[in-house]
Length: 207
Length: 207
Image (cartoon, rainbow over all chains, first blue to last red; front, side, top):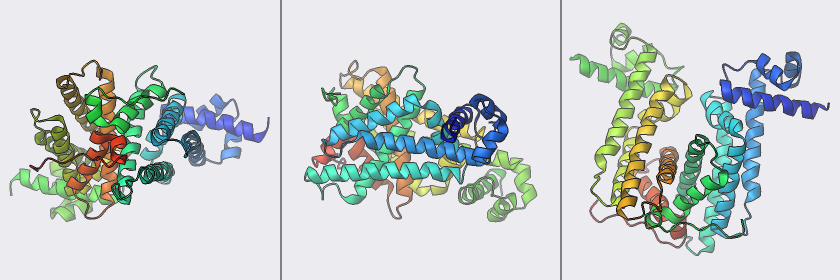
């Protein structure tokens, strides 16, 4: 079996183990057993528990960042960009619950250097969202209305709302990424004012 | 000096030290020196570093929760309730930056039993927000439109947005709680759709 594939199997086993046991309680024995390889082979490929945990964070962060970016067409209308990005985010998190726990709970809780890997992902997504909102606001002709600094604030609010909602959705069995994204669209696009008047955001007919 | 006052001085010193050094690096010597008392007195009053940290978390969480609840008049219009609650939250965080770091960064990062104290505060505020949105939606006559489960989702999104924005505001010297609250009102009340058309939420004339 090629090294690349075996390494992915080790990372798969490590993500599950770190997410369910926590970083400190997870043992290399358990990870090796779940991956179906010997412990020395895990050490040969990934050096140490720290290096293995870092590799898990990097892999899960890259996959999540790529899923969101790939889903957004910068030429689409702003609400469609937001809908596609959010749906990709919540679907990815719903399909990779252990990866989300490793990123959002474990990486932050272990402090440096792991927390910095999570921060880098979060900052990258926030910058991406800031640029998308700024571009949409410029196109809508309200550049000076929605000034640069406030766009960054709104992007931080949106990213925080998505993070928090991902945790809530994770505690609801059967909740799909699409459903969670629709709830956040109602909140973020239409706003509470419209929502309380029964005016929801309407998903585009073409899914 | 009465015990109660001396204890508050120790907690003041401990919050500053835990926020700036981190829980693990903070020393009881440093806390005692900053509080202007002897180290044995800190141990006499607060038993251990763990107990001192727990007492800090409880005190800061109680103060933050009370500041938000006290600011909201349940008889006011929904946008006024939201505005007053958010303004109280961001003003409290801006005035107690070390307390916020202890709650939001340190308590979570140290795992149990400390993380549970933060979770209890966060869950309490989320329940309070859920009840407020549900009451406002019922009054607006869109009870079935905005069903129970989705109200909880919207409340989680709002709490996550506020948390994230508090971190952003903390990195901007001179940013007031009122300014941060206005940014979140624009986002949460008016929604991105209105915001991009230059339609902001208008603060009430009576501050």
